[in-house]
Amino acid sequence: MAVKTDNRRLSLEEKFRAFASLQFNGVLLMTPSDFLRSLVDDQKPVKMLVTNDSEFIQNLMKKASRKKYEPHFFSNLQNDGIITFSEYLFLLHILTSLNISNNGCFSESS
Image (cartoon, rainbow, N blue to C red; front, side, top):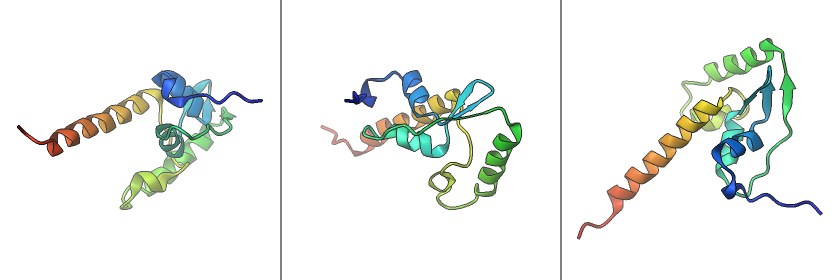
């Protein structure tokens, strides 16, 4: 019987490692889909692709670059593009900062 991991109890680094689906030259990378999946507690990681092919990574970035002017840029990226661990931390910081500031906007003042 497989033991289900509680994703809420993972450190940020553990969560990044659990959901990163690419490994390039020993460096773990996430796709935008991996990032979105890591935000939802009941999601399971996908199988990792290990590659040393720089052309493969460049192709992902080219595809992402072509989509940058679309209205739903991030959700349309899916598996095109890569996110490093430092970018993952940055995106999480932005999301939590926005959440905190939005909560302040809607709170009742006494």
